[in-house]
Figure 1 (tube, one colour):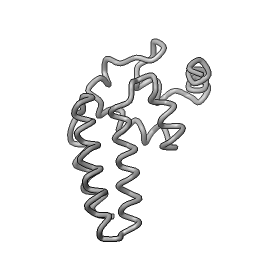
Figure 2: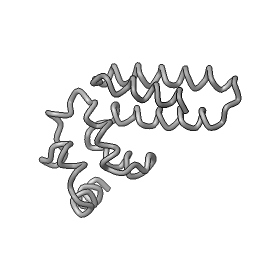
Figure 3: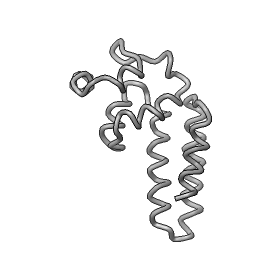
Figure 4: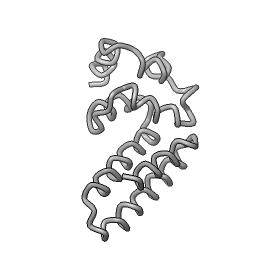
Length: 118
């Protein structure tokens, strides 16, 4: 929907600290609550997905792969678009790997990281 696309484009114009991500997620939650009164199930679903994507900006780096592969079920290339919006994108590491490497590496590397976290 256009509203979802507008908010997604707006989100991608910034980088987010943990506090900024929390504020953004709260704003999206307010949009969901407000637009719920219009009884547009598709729009509500898309905005709920956007709230989930906002979690990428908030979760600790060590929890990113589990979030993306689990609750969000996003392709790693798509998830990387949002991971790059994190203020810590250039400095955060998981198991000595940058976030860029984490989301561009093959499935075997990701599975190894997930198995160590379990």
